[in-house]
Length: 249
Image (cartoon, rainbow, N blue to C red; front, top):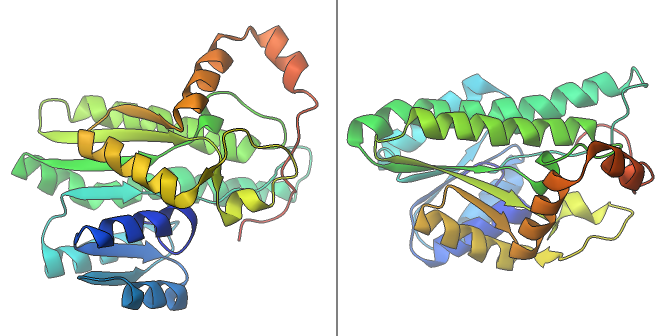
């Protein structure tokens, strides 16, 4: 699982460790990751890597497979978010970083495991997308684009693997109480604690759901957003709250 050193990723790590699952945890912050691995019960392998670096992700995939074999579940959870505005040339770097980590990082996370899972005839590839991928929100062009990309990518991958025994699960969270959302200067309806979100995500993974929105209330919001005519959507969201600009941490 990538993005394991904070937020939803850390909550998922705690959830699965309590069940006795052998874990490979990936994140950039080696010290935090090592501390988490020491804290958790059972067999936990800390795999420091930047999820925007495909070569690093291939290397950790090889380390995990050598230690535990081909995994039953791979969760691409790593993600970064920051406010962006296209008019500012300085924000091009932020766009690149967000898309590289959130979208290309997901592809690079799954790539080493697709063929082995297909050959075995089983496995689950779980991508953490977002309700923010449903419609483009002001001041969040990079993040919304990256999550819209993950939703379409995961759908393509699911169809490619149809009948192989490998399931692809798309999880679209709403607001979860994490360091990423802590900086949001606007109301966050149906905000979930990270541990409760992890429990619901794990249940969807266990069930092999194709698509799930967490919490379910945001699923209704997502469906309504899809149905809004563009002229009405533009008017309603033109003045929506925006995340501060900067570079992703």
